[in-house]
Image 1 (cartoon, rainbow, N blue to C red):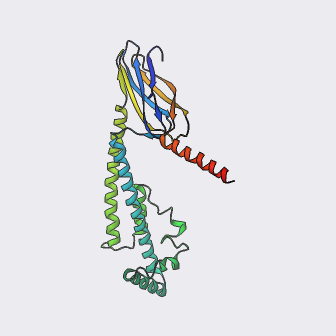
Image 2: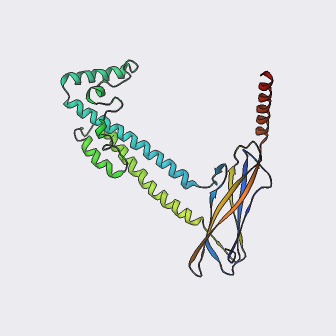
Image 3: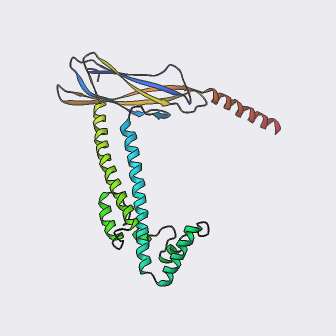
Length: 273
């Protein structure tokens, strides 16, 4: 490291607990050749880590993953309803009559029947229309599961069935989301590759990290640790090293006031005794 890079950690001169603080890692190229793919990774930073802004790929991925899971969950409910209707078609007349009556009452007066009578009659579980021995088999986890489950669960549904149409619409939406996820992941990987830097001889670059200090009642030291990696294009070699430094947090004003309250409470308690 000493031959090619100089690295140092800059911390604020005074930092109070439960407040936001900034840390900078300065990297200088000491060699006479450019060094590229320089990155600094946080390994140990006290308190709550504040991620840098300007990461749309993370937000977009999160939104798409959430939408994907919501659609999959709704499709699983539709599969359960299709299974329930299949069971209803083959159930004895009395059970079908009870189930249909219960359904009409629950639509008109939902507060009168808070549970599904038919589910209780045809299944060992009261919280699902799919029996326990088939729940994992009918669970949708990826695109390959959909065709198999669709053929099994909807084989007796009419082509103009609203349930089947709703499942098909969700299927199309899910395919679109999966395609968007693939593109977004590729974009995120490309952005991450761009987060590396090249340093010319004598050039310095600073990496910024932010955090929210832990709540402390007295002055305390916490360790900071970072890993620096770089590539020497001339010799096509990769190097890495660790940086360590302690940061000191002073108690916040809230902590001092709370501590004084605790001491006063203890004193008054002792006086009463």
